[in-house]
Length: 464
Ligand SMILES: CC(C)=CCC/C(C)=C/CC/C(C)=C/COP(=O)(O)OP(=O)(O)O
Ligand SMILES: [Zn+2]
Image 1 (cartoon, rainbow, N blue to C red):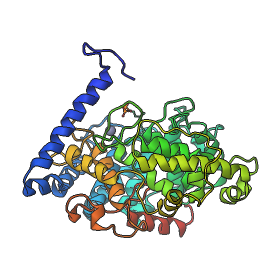
Image 2: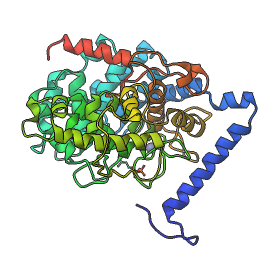
Image 3: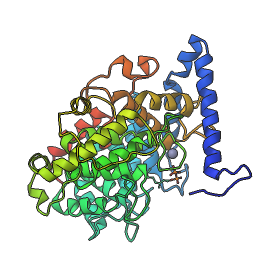
Image 4: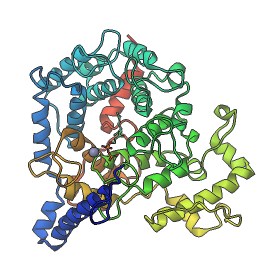
């Protein structure tokens, strides 16, 4: 964390924060004072320019493009997913070219490396598999060797329950997410893959409420998304303190900028539109008792549904009413700096406070963050006129930020939709309704139709 004191008595981070707020305010003022024409231009998603920027990147994947780059499956994923969100079809020949390129990144013993001949890595395996899912169709999906991938996942498995990113590599929460997401889409969520994952991830949840990369590390949006998504995928999110996680996440949205920061006391950044914004729909997938009432700790918890446990245990419901009521206040009051989980013996039981009852009734239908403010940050501060999106004003565009700004924009636009596949109301989409992107699956971050196609394909084929 930057903490050098400057001549004006501000730390480096505080100075950067002030400068960023100034830049954002200038943009917002220009927006507020502009003509109607100016308004709509500023709030427009510059689709053609973004698609042009992405397509240019995809045609440069050949061996002459950054021969030493270990990130090429990621470039494929960022670009293909951005194009899919924008509703662009991939040309058949270009799709074949990418399938061929990714097949050459595959290691004969399983998993995909960062380029042909490179050591297999879990992150590039995730990127390659979900690129192929995004291309879709039998040719792309059948190119994935499920049995070899299972071997690779088991080679990476560590006795702690976590996964190494590569042979002799680091173990962290990204490893759990990438392994579990790949196993999920390939229908490989077998007991030896899942074993110990919940224990490992819950050991990374910090006193702040978010999840760090490894035990003892600071909570961060990237790892919090990964940890929560992995646990939702294996149906074990109840191992986390979910009210604390939600409390941490809601306070990461900047109340001036509208974007999200990745961790406490850092600047907002467009990519956290997905890593942080994507946390909320995951929480909303969970049974409300679980989200609002917190963790249930039992030795035999695998055999007892946390919901039943919560409904029958007097002690848990006392704890639950305390944390749920203060959580509700935190969300309703917006972003004050601290939420205090005071122990209030006289806390009303479920249903006796109308606010609380309304919250219980509404929380699945109401977004848990300010979705309009997030869309405003992305559209006004992250778009680059020539195409592509960026971290913040003053930074250059790149494919990573293009992908995760667009993914976060899609999450924000669909946050009010009644179901994953329902079209949102025009009022949920900031700017012209034509800004609407394709829906992304909140657990895997691939567009919905391609997610369902892959699901069907892999649940009907046995491992090769
Ligand atoms: C699927 C997959 C591989 C997910 C990766 C998730 C992810 C984005 C993790 C974040 C890693 C991290 C600690 C960034 C901090 O960078 P920083 O210090 O430059 O940024 P900050 O100031 O915003 O914290
Ligand atoms: Zn970023």
